[in-house]
Image (cartoon, rainbow, N blue to C red; front, side, top):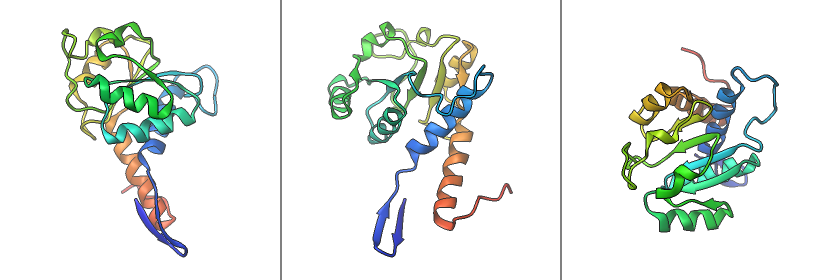
Length: 178
C-alpha cells in the first residue's frame, strides 16, 4: 500500500501484519492462557519462495518465532533463509522438522507422496495450518489439514482482515460490517 504523507510517499506492507493477527487469533482459540503474542517461541515452517515469502518471514521473525523456510526450489529458499538468518530445510527433508505452524505461500506446492510434493502426513493434530495461495478459498492442502485435525486459519478471514487494515490505513476509520 502506498500512501502520500505530508513528507512524501510511504509504502506499507500489510500482509505480514494481517497474517500475524489471523494466526494469533487462531492460536488463542481454546488456549489455556491469554498470551499477548501467541506466536512467540513457536516453531513456524514457511513453505514457498515467492516474493511475499520475504514479507511473511520478516513478520514471523518479529514475533520471536523459530522460523524454518522450505520450497520446492531449494536454492531459492536457501537464499531467503540466509537473508533473514533463519533455518533452511530442504523440501524433501521438511518431514523431519517439527513445526507448530505451517504457512504455505507457493501455489505450485501440491499434495503427494514423492519428494517434490507436500506429503499430507506432515500435518498433525496439534498444528496450525495457513495457506494464502488462493485467498479467500480453502485449498486442497487446508482441506487435508482440517481432516487431520489441524487448526485452520481461514483464508476468508485473512482476506477480510487485509481489506479492513487497508481501509483503516487509508481512511483512519474501521471498515463497516456491511
